[in-house]
Length: 538
Image 1: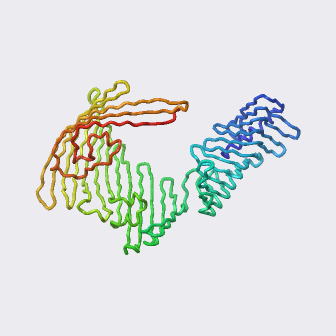
Image 2: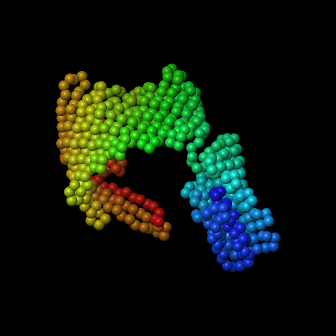
Image 3: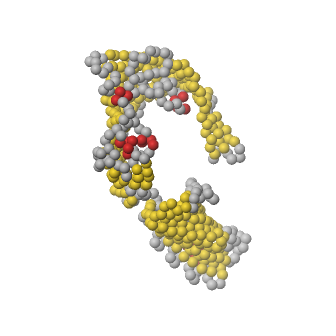
């Protein structure tokens, strides 16, 4: 229960006594809406068996008592207001339900003098997640605007299967700042303690706070023992930095830093790494990673993305994680983009750095020196017919392979027809590609071109049905596509950037099995597939 609810809760307990409602009314429902004395909020009070005044200034709320405030609800079996001590005792099981948490306690006590609500032997569960836990005591203190918990446990395992559990001797959270501190923390795995921390500061609202982050310890055959101690700096609401001293027993001390920022028109990240003297390679090594995006206007934007490392073995020696160490090339890109109502234009320069010693220079990718891409679309160019246009021009440079320029032009017309739940989309496009090719160690150049028409018919539909009393919705989306691409000799054309991608469901419905413009797969084929979605109905 939020600390801010204590004032209206206290007002709801006091108001019936102030209003003179003393008589016993067994068997009758009593529902009141009472304005809180210290808040503009109103709270609903329901006592199934009524409200009774006793000798000694004691007021009893009888039978399934409920306090409701918005989406927050407190249910108890009985409640008693002790006017001489200005306290409210809640008898029997106490259940609090809020937007984000549900608490069940064996007893509760509200001290109106100190604006303090105490839950005893409480269990809690966070909504929309499996997180749950317990506490010997939960105290909500409105005067000091804080929440205090004693002997707390936390886990996300299923009930009865606590494979791991986080325990703390005490936790205090300051409501105004949103920051808290846990003391005597230990992490248990299968009831065996594996980590202990005397104290830990954290943010209860996900807010950022400067300080040390959780250290990381690891080991590898190449780097030996690894120890990271990251320190986070919350510079401003729109920028932060993380400094990570890293000890690698076989390589030496590594210094890492990351800076992030967000402004109205731009965002970016700069990551730096430096190893002063590598014990393994006997040299200094570095890493620079840059990502920046800037919006110049409603139409124009800039992008800079690239990574530089000191040598080909840097990723293999110092890189972290399987996917990073599996890289053979680091991509660098500088681009300007224009986004219009009917047309997008991209001006781009790209390059690569090879970071694997086994990749021979002959098989390294081309460097793209300026590249221009245009994509235009015109809905309803003709009745039920849409128009599209793809254009690209660029120069591909390589020291030991074919270099040259490529111009690609591809207009397309596609129609839309619908008959009930079935949609059919025929399309016709014309691929025109020209090359200005220069072989290595030759001064002359050759010109080539290729013209290919492509026809497709794409049909799809959607089927939906609800099953069983659990309102289980099943949706099926069958799809079939016929593609026709004529056979044309392409052996004389260079291959600059075209690949055969891994097969997946999206690739199944692409007319061209190649990705890129240098090769087009000649075929007449029919593709068919179905997607299914299973979800609980509303």
